[in-house]
Length: 503
Image (cartoon, rainbow, N blue to C red; front, side):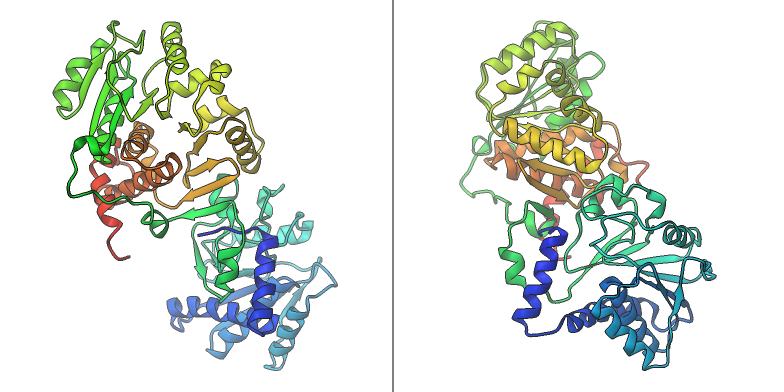
């Protein structure tokens, strides 16, 4: 699913109005009707008080139209107009007149007015500002927003929480509506998925308002939301007449004394994701552990007992995953450098492999095109430098990816795969996956997919999805607190099976 910016969404509105020969007011009525149906299906005329706060633009027009529909169903509705400007949009005025014809007169709130009483049992509909906002609300409007947030009422935002920008972090985070639900019209919005801005909506849902599908399909976008519908088209079914070599050979290079488990998690995840063969290259202290715990994994060791001092092997892997538990001792860094200078095999680099790259920046230039990097936030900062907010972070990751032709996984609640200017936002995963070893598992899954012949970008997008889905399926039977990396591995198979289940 594409994610469009504010300008593109406006173009989609205009194109739809022209092609479908409707007015902008009629399109607004569609939006209000969808919001009404969402609310009505849940409340079923329950005796609850609904407060609708409207701005004076088209977002406010949506709110006024919604108020009319709710009143017709005999809901208890209080409508307020936040009078922050003398300018009113045409569609706002049309819906204002329609309300007045019902003998309903919204309460106009001016600078000197106090916020009306809102009980925690009430519902607030936020229709103050829309996606076109590009500057902070004036102080008295910000005070109203803070009052709504402090009311503890259930808050539903129309399209986007008021005070939130589409392409920047708000200067005053206290002047943004905190919503329980955001009802996004037609398509989701980028701010929902970034840590700095996603905190303002607890959950979101898309409401289809009938924008022209052909226009949306054909318009160019660099941002995609990834769910089951997107990854199922990437899935490569197994051939009947195949064998283990058909599905590639993963070499996992990592581990050190006390951190052998990191390489083990990656190795097992690579096998469970479908790789035909997995070999682990570890220091000698890991040999017996691997051979005992993971009999399906072949093991090679370097000469040193406790850490990797050289990387030499006589196999021909399809992909190398390296860095998990590796350490950054000088001898290991030297071995890492020598390895990169002589490798042509596709790479997935994580953990201490990334830390070495951050310290030895010249090594980045030695990476093959479309090498996959899977940093956590700390590792990412060491690679690209500090950032002031999530939008700058994304810009810096894009520039880094493009300059070095690398695929970068930006881990988070919504993990984002970045390749050049393209962003693929994942929708699976949960807070329970913030646990030791989860990243090692992700690296192994991605490497396993590359081994099976998935192109590096597809392997990364699909791998991130499977990783998150495995975590989601596991947590259904456990809990956020008890979820472990090993359990994520155990549910990789279930994540595959879920691709073909109806949802």
